[in-house]
Every structure is written in C-alpha cells, then in structure tokens.
Amino acid sequence: MGKNKGNPALIELVIVIFFFSISSVTIVKLFMASYDISEKSKSETLAVIKMQDIAERFKAQPNAVAGLLEDWEKSDNRYVGYFDDELNMVSKESALYIIEITVDQQTMTGGNYIRLHILSYENTSDQKIVLQTNIACYVPEAAS
Amino acid sequence: MSKKFQLRVGIGASSILMIILTLALTSFAVLSLVSAQSDSKLTDKTKIMMTEYYTADEKTEALLARIDAVLINNADAANLNDELGKLNETLHTDENGLLSFVIPVNDNRQIAVTIRILDESALRYEIISRKLESVGDWDPETDIEPWIK
Amino acid sequence: MLFGIYALFSLILAVMGIRVFENITHSADSNNEIRSSLFYTANKIRSTNAGSVYLEQRDGIEVLILETTFSDDPYETLLYYDNGAIKELLMKKGDVFSADMGDTIIETGGLQFSQTGGLIHITITAYDGKTYSMSVYAQSH
Image (cartoon, rainbow over all chains, first blue to last red; front, side, top):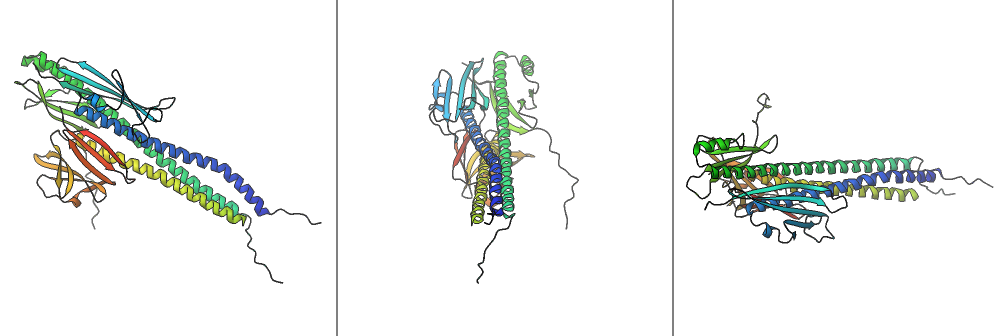
C-alpha cells in the first residue's frame, strides 16, 4: 500500500490564505478609518460653510433673525436645526448634526447689541462639538 | 505513450502572490489614511480660522458700541478724544479727522476699521472702511538669482 | 486550478483596494475643492472695502470685482469662472479684460455669483455635480 503524500503547494496555499486573512483585518481597519475620517472631514467643512452662511446673513439683517431661522425649532431665544451629513435639514430622528443658535439682545446707550451663539455638534451620545462661535452685530439707533 | 502536459505551480508562488497583494493593499490603505488625515487637518484649520475671525468681529462690534456710547455722552470735543482713547490702545485720529482702530484676528491678520464722526446727523458715526488685512511687512527675497540661459 | 482561483480573487481584492483608495482621495479632493473655492473668495471679499465689491458682466462672463488702490492708482481684482477653473486677475481699472488673462486658483465644476443688497452669494459646483453655497456680507454698517 503506497503512502498518501499531501500536495505541498496545496498546504502552502492554505497557510498563505490563513496569514492573508489575518493581515486583511488590519488592512480593512485602515480603510475603514480612512473612510470615516474623510466623511467626517467633509461634513465638518459643510458645517463650517453653513454656519458662516448663517453668520453673514445675520450681519446683513441683524434684526431679522426670526425670518432667517423660520424653519428651525424655536424655544424662547434658542433655535435648533437638525442636519444630515450633507448639512441638509432633516428630522430630529435622522439627524447626524445639530446646530443650536442662542440669540442674546442687549440695549446699549446708542442702539442694540445682538449676539448669536452658534453651536454645532454631532447627534451622538457624546455630542462631540464640531464648532462653536459667537457672531455679534451692533445696530445703532438714530438719536431722537 | 503520450505524455500529458501538466501545469504545475511550484512551491512559493502562492506566498509571493500573497506578499505582493498584502504589500499593495497595505500601501493603498496607508495612503488613504494619510490623505484623509491631511484633509482633516485642513478642515480643522478652517474651523480655527473661522472662529478667530468671528471672535475678532465680535470685539469690533463691541468696540463700535462703546464708541457710540462715548459719542453720545461726550459732546465736548476735548473730552471726547480722551474718552475715546481709553477704549482701545489702537484707537487714533488721523490727519483727516477719521477715527481708526484695529482688532487682531491672529498673528497674521487683523480687522482694520475707519469711521467718520458725524456732526449734524441722527447717527453719530459712519463706517468708511472695514476690512480684513494682513499684518507685517512682506519681505521679498532679493538675493535669488534667476536662471538666465 | 485552485491556484488560478486564488490568483483571480487576489486580483479582485487588489482592484477593490484601488477603488476604495480612489474613492477616499476623490472625497478629500472634493472637500478641498469646496473649501478652497468658497473660503478663498470669502476672504477676498472681506479684504476689500465695503462699497468696492460688486458684480459685473465682462467679456460675456459674470465677474466679481474687488476694487483697490496701489500708489493712488485704481486697480481691480477680478474673480471669475472660465474653462473649468476659478481664475483671478489683478489689473488696472479701465484696462481691457479677457477671460484667458487670469491665473487659475483652483479647478472646479462651476462658480456663480449673485447679489442681494450687501450679500454676495457664492455658489460652486463640484466635479461630482453637487452645488454648495455660501454668503458673504460685503457692506459695513
């Protein structure tokens, strides 16, 4: 009876596939991390663009904040908007990013000082802040 | 007796192919990560620049409010300059009687504002110029010889 | 035959890896395109005096004009879209403008300007076909 010799090339193939499957875990992790970073970076850039757009429109018409944010959720002097990864307005449940704007108006000697505190954060359990800044506008009033 | 042509793969071919494939995929993965991180850093810089600009803009608006208050409360010209000088160390009147000041944004940029105080007007001042400008002198390199054929 | 199958799947994996790499770098490029176009234009507007920023049609192209003065001479910086790129041209006021005179700032799918009052609206079209807009207030108050 002859011995049944194994094919060494086949054994090598099995070992190679085994080692490749181990290394592929790391490779896939690297790709996934790259993809996550890239997508987050794009969303944050769009968030900056959105916030800057709001800020500049506010500076053009500082007394018309309500009109500027009419589609947003309003409570007292706070406006909340819910956005997806492309910074399009969506419902609260499907939002990836939340932008909160708090309006503060002070009457000064010569006019009104209106300030918006804009806060943008991720709609996750840790609510990681993307960006926050204040935008202010002094609106002088004509002397009577 | 005819011999069958058999294609046999030698030992080592699988290993070589695996090594090449792993190296290629690892290179692509690392390059993707580097590219994504570089983009992320630029986004972070953009966020910082935006925050710095609007912080300086807020200070500019606050100073304008204080200047307006001083203009309302100080009709006397002599007292006016003293009171205005207390508001900001860069606040000064130029030879044309225009009031100017700067608010730094960061080490490289500032917001420069020039206003005219109005005598006969319901509003006390008018903004003549308000712009973002670079700080520091541009120092051109003059000792580089252009290549001349 | 087994080795042949192994070689084929290795090739497929390599191609998949290349595709993922391409997608990620395209995404980074697109992000850079959006960021550079919008914020470069916004900073140009902010660096110009109020009242010296306006839109005009020149050589059949919509141009954003930023007036400035060097040594008491009036100059204009023109920002416009031509031939697949955002271009910038600094020239003396009154000189004849031609679209091919400008320097390329960044290549992009499209750039449009519009104005409502003191607000300049900048809209860029990225190469993926999507549009992104931002406004800049070009007047002091």
